[in-house]
Length: 258
Image (cartoon, rainbow, N blue to C red; front, side, top):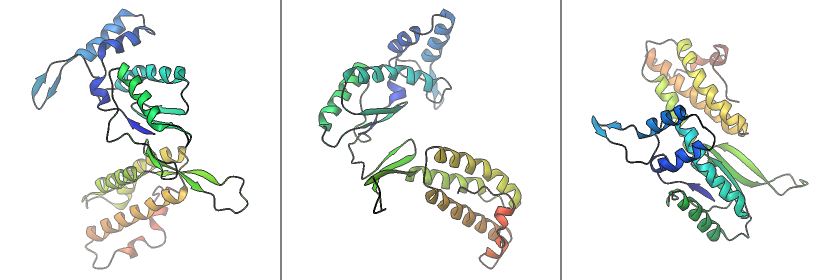
């Protein structure tokens, strides 16, 4: 079951959240600081919006921590319920791994009840029950149960992981944004700007265990964008591939994803 909480950061009840914080923090000055942070109004399109007792400042440095503190109560409820399945959660995104014979509708009803006690609800469009063989996205990673092709393998299926389609689209757009139309830049300068972007994205997915062949596809995309950049920069009447001969990008230090 792939689940998402509707408008989580906007709907966290502030008073129950502060009560949970007080269980671990006794310093009244710290409590006062957090309370002031939560109760501060915001400016929207130049107009002041007063606080309404719910929500945390999404994008604030402390918001992910406060969000996890509040949903820790959900983790405890799941743990004490002894329901079948394994809960995996990060902030407001979570998945529940279930046996195929488990009554999924009943589990979904129980989860809705737990979140309802916290004043939250599941997002109807983003919450769904899927088969592991069809795959699902979680934290920018696509996970799918695939058949093992080796004839004498001990297991018939294994979990395979690669970057999700939205994650690949975001990194491709980021590469386009970095290169842009800045034709006054040298190729070396462009590579220097691209490397941290590529390295950060690649390290995240390598840590998740993504298959190298899926990471390798991005190498060709980056090379193609740099070829177009050089072609336009030098008004090259050809395709511009001659400017990248001899593995020039690698020799100049372009980060390789696999």
